[in-house]
Length: 159
Image (cartoon, rainbow, N blue to C red; front, side, top):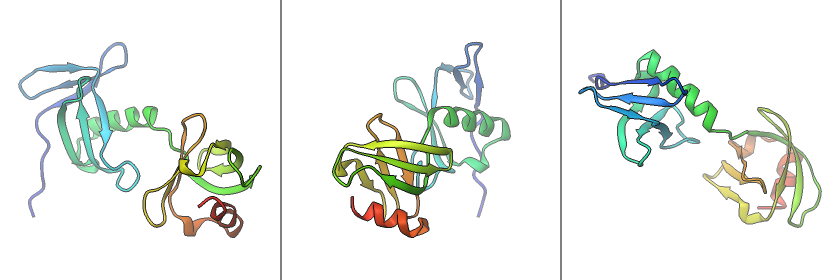
């Protein structure tokens, strides 16, 4: 099976730190953004480079196949834009009626989130949940079965 090669384009930063996409023909597009097509299920595949107007300028099927310099710039940009802590454990909830305050342990440290209602818990797959708190921060539970028993019992009261 032949390996797909990326087109002859580059990605760099301007003096203000914004991303600049330079096409194979030399056309420059400033203030572009990388966007993951499947940020939760397949974060390392299907990344688009989008113009400020929302036009797709480039498509990367597998991020690992991109040149190291491009991959580094994309990883830096996505890390700065995407903030989705993964819940590892639910320590306590203030109430089983909404709104309730949850004390959780995440992959980015301890946190407290306010759940406004059960409708802010979205099931992405059988084992994956996305929880939006009152401040608009999204918390991810990647695998329900990986949570400890206490966390699952607390969560079951809301599902």
